[in-house]
Amino acid sequence: MASIVLRNVDKIYAGGVKAVNGLNLEIRDGEFMVLVGPSGCGKSTALRMVAGLEDISGGEILIGDRVVNHLPPKDRDIAMVFQNYALYPHMTVEENLAFGLKLRKMPKAEISKRVQEAAKMLGLEQYLKRKPAALSGGQRQRVAMGRAIVREPQAFLMDEPLSNLDAKLRVSMRASLNQMHERLGVTTVYVTHDQVEAMTLGDRVCVLRDGILQQVDTPQNLFESP
Ligand code: ADP
Ligand code: ADP
Image 1 (cartoon, rainbow, N blue to C red):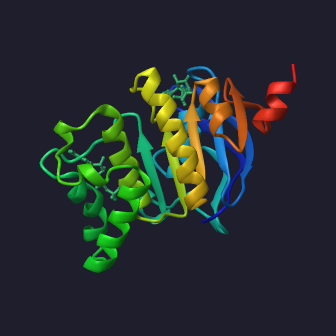
Image 2: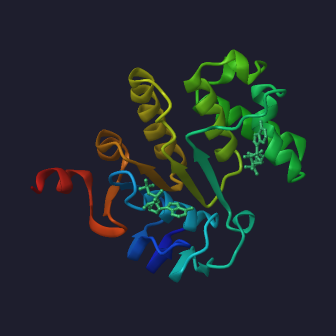
């Protein structure tokens, strides 16, 4: 686990759009931080800069005590989940969960232990031998999350992971995410445009508008303030 610090971070896209403007934000060790705001406010860009998927135009990003400005994504010790979960269609759930660990040449017993734990936590135990095509959207998204958490990263980054799911599934996935966070306590940054998600998931919520931080506070305090 690690804190994530953004210091005066800017992003100017080619063409001159200032997507993120002087963003200062400290995400504490183990905290669940939600970035919320309307479409185009810069939340994905901010997350993608933390992930290393987008260059930063100014300022500094730290993960733990390391400045990561020029580190490629694979060296940042983070895991990501997106709206469009890309599972390997020819592999079973178990193989999908294990794949990233096999690539890292982790011992088999350790892989098996982590896969079992993740499957248990995410309610996937009875689906381990199935292929993605035989799963519901929510189950597939759980596999995508499982694949991220088995790596035991320092931080977990999610961009609208529930927005392809129907309303009922979103409710149960929110509960699963809360449980997962309670269990693992991994520093998490979660992007959504959905106020309800922000309020039910975040330890704190950061509200962005036009690339500028408007407010950052607990859901309770944000909800009570006008
Ligand atoms: P959000 O995630 O809040 O919807 P984004 O971070 O995707 O917002 O976008 C912020 C702003 O940057 C928007 O004005 C968007 O059009 C612009 N933008 C996003 N990606 C690019 C890109 N690759 N090139 C140019 N402009 C972009
Ligand atoms: P890691 O465990 O390191 O996160 P993944 O196994 O999740 O790696 O994915 C490695 C790369 O392959 C990622 O860029 C991912 O988007 C891509 N990928 C995942 N599933 C598929 C798929 N079914 N087809 C093509 N590419 C995929």
